[in-house]
Length: 550
Image (cartoon, rainbow, N blue to C red):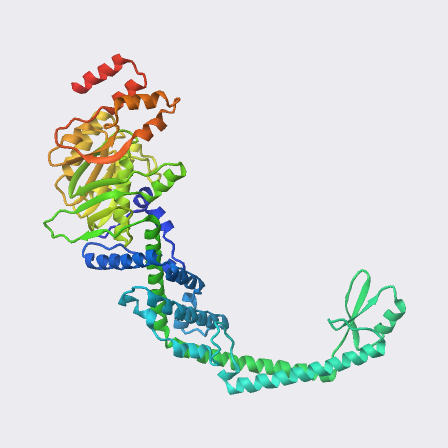
């Protein structure tokens, strides 16, 4: 059964939507390539490794000299969208002059791009960019002007050239004759003729108005509140020439249509090559967009592991950053603390205080894996992983697409869908599972869920507050460092001097790093310590400790 690699909710929650919005190809072909992106699934490790090797070369080239990349960006931005014209051409349509212009501009900028690419390390699978379209360019530029403009030149057809020459001569004859007639009339009337060919007479000059109205060759062309405008009508000779011009224009149009049909037929032979060129330009544009994004976010290529059926899947992250969260923190004047974590087939539990970064850690693992399998470098000091078949992030958030269900009911529905995948090579991330019901049943259900997934091929990570999950056999336990390494006196001083802004004070001291926890180690009682520092009565704190001990 086929499953989506990453569903809409997981993509949005983990920040992959954000990453895609920041991946910005320049040309319409690059945008189309981005929309058609597919993940590299297990079995395609070699191809993905090759892609990252290429991106690494390009990234080094960009860091050394951005000039060729900037020039390419400019050239890609000039490319017209010729996909619609190509589809019509392949369907047998006759192209328009606008289509010919678009193709000529495409070939013009293709030549410039091809020359610029010689300075960059590119693979053979972009060889379509090296295709020779000089003969096709000659079809569109028979007079060898070298210009990206297009005109249906006389040289396309001797008949067309002769007809156009005849029409130009007749237009000149008509213009000279009409000018002579206008000048003679102006001299007779003693009036100056406007550039529009009209005679302007003030309405107050009734004698002149009457004189002009009696001339059969004149007619009123327009009036204004103060003036009347007269214009000479063409005589029989002029009308005859105008009819001849109309005949010539119709004949020229017929010949031009034939030239367009012949041009379209000849260009149609290049259809497959042009289709390959457009697709390759799209791949190139998308590749460069990935490299630009990697440069902007200081990304590095992941290390892709190939594993046998007996080996465990794994994801090992060192010094990773979540670009969306980092951008949000930067707006508030804060820095994102890099995260290191390791997940493997089976179950891993992550514990820590509220607002300690557990959810961000889950989102980060989902995001980096999605980025890597879509061929994007990742913002981490090191990212080593095996390819997975898909990613799901299961949260306790109420889902709008499950009307009528409670929060817990919505979560159970999401869990059921995720559990259908646990027997396969999926990355499944659970944020506070079973927290939407009473703590006793919730803890029992969460523990059963962890135990159920502990020896399965999927990678399962659980962020939880349930202490019971931290002591299960065969389950890796990680913990947010939080405030466990913070000196109590420093913490007390920070809370005292915070002017009531306790959250800001705790955030400033919080360590969002993750650390592995040995089996049997008790969880830190940070909540009780903070409650004590914030002035909760000692009797309540002591009683809470007794209950925890029991």
